[in-house]
Structure formats: C-alpha cells, structure tokens
Image 1: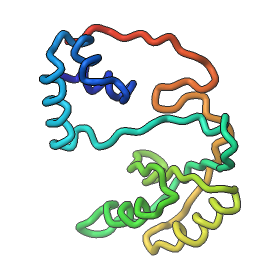
Image 2: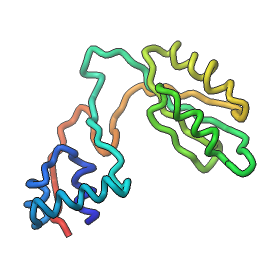
Image 3: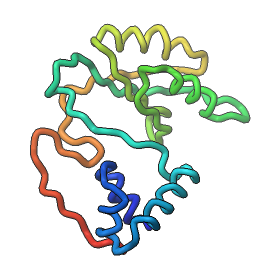
Image 4: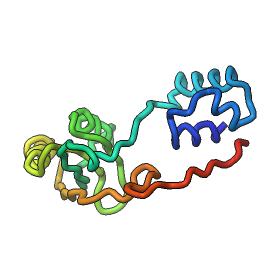
Length: 158
C-alpha cells in the first residue's frame, strides 16, 4: 500500500473516497489502512505547504551546519534532543560528511537567527562549531515547485 502513502504525501487533503477510486478499493478499507498507518507511526502528521513569500509574514529561514562531539553510549541523540526541543527548529537531520547535524530554523529577522545560534545552539557543551546559511529563495520544497503551477499527474495504484 505504498501508493496510498505516496498519494497522501503529495496531497494530504485526499479523502478516503477519492483514494478508494484511485486505488480501486473500498473507502472503508482505505480508512482502516490509514488508521493503522497512524497507529503504527508510519503516518506521523499532516502538514500544509505554504508559500510564505506570497503573504505579509516576514521571516528568515536558515540551514545551520553543526559539528558536535558525540556522547558515550548516547551518540548524537542527546544533543539532537536538546536542539529539536527549541521551537525555532523546523527540521533536524543527522548527516554524513563534513558536519554532523543540519538544523533548519525560522526566525523573524537575521538577527533573531543569529541570536539563536549564539545564545542557544553554540552554548550546548557538545557543539564544536556551527556554520549558518540563510535561505534567499525557495525554488522547490517537498516536491513542490514554487511560483510555477505544476500539472498534476497521478499514476495508478498497485
């Protein structure tokens, strides 16, 4: 049933009835499948993707590379828990390569983001260094191209 997950990931507003038609199944079966995915933690939430640049909201988005010293017996987990507990943090990823964590945050101004890095992130004992990259423009996010209307092409369900 990966197809149901893919369809929902692309459009969380699809109803069980719409999914049933797309997958040649009964709506009741689709509802049960979705409930089970939610119960099992496969579906962890539903989000709306918004192009904030088309609104009056002022914000700054940044990606922060973080090098840390992993803790014995806990690796990167304890530090990651500290970081993702901050409300500014939108996403947090463990990375391979030149740094350990990638933190995506949003703030009202560049100064607010800089404050977060200096006063919250850099003060964590295990943090060795940070590098902040401000997002200047989003071209594509979570499969959606910004500023260009895409033709909706859906495949058949398996």
